[in-house]
Length: 156
Image (cartoon, rainbow, N blue to C red):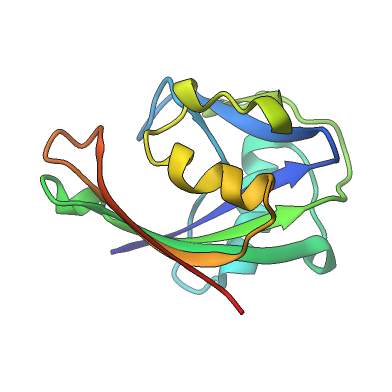
């Protein structure tokens, strides 16, 4: 299972998403992030990945871990991933486009779920709107497009 990190950069009204231009999820609006290098922690990886994809600098002390999600693709196990999800309300710099991501500010109260992966409807509003913190396992159907099952357990 691949280890990845994702970050929701946000303020009271908006969250920064990325329009994925290449690679896994092309054409989807996603939380910005990526894989861990062999010696990195999830925190180190998200700081690096976020800067590489948006040119925005995030300080470690401004990151808050808000969820852990396992994505299971039964028909394509090489897609399986464990994601450590962060949130940040402070940053330095203005988001700019990279080869992989076009940054897009989306309204938190009008999330573009129809442009995101199918799983987003089951956990992104809970995280961003209801401020829930959780572990989740999300299983996809054999089409690798539609969610089959969601198990979400809130943190105490």
